[in-house]
Structure formats: structure tokens, C-alpha cells
Length: 89
Image (cartoon, rainbow, N blue to C red; front, side):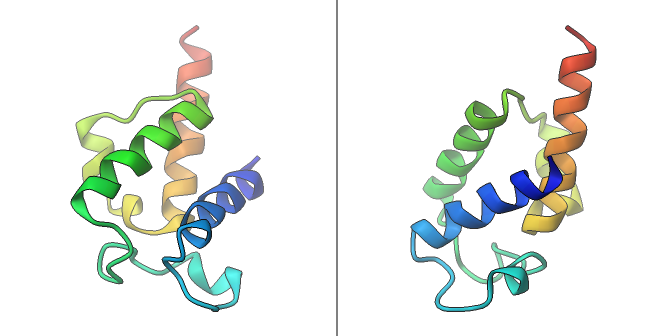
């Protein structure tokens, strides 16, 4: 599932022409905030899209997690939250 999550996140940025013509694998460790890929309004859209797609919800702590700023790190965080969500059901 981690590959599926990384792929979906990468597609989200690529579909919005945020990344240029880079090799998709090279995008995994780019800090998308530093790269300017997200405006403040797009952050809200991004988080909402992720929560709907993966059936989970971020906490304020998650949004401060250092992993939140890259596709690879965010994929780890999503998987962790998804597992916790499914275990609590």
C-alpha cells in the first residue's frame, strides 16, 4: 500500500503542474513547502483530499510532524494513521 500512497501523492502534485518535468522518483524527498508547490489555500485542499482518499484524519500534531513536508514522509504518516484508524474501528 505504501507505493500506492506515494503514487497518489505524486499524481496530486503532477496533475496540478507543481513539479515540472522531473523524474517522479526524484520528487519523493522534495520539501514541497520550500519548493513553493502549495499556497496556504492549497494546503487545506491537499489535506482534505488526502483525508477523503485514505479515510483518515490528521491531528494538529500530524501537521507539525517533520514527515509531513515530503511525499515519502507523508506516505509514512498516512499509512501510520490509516492503520491506527482501522485498528480503532
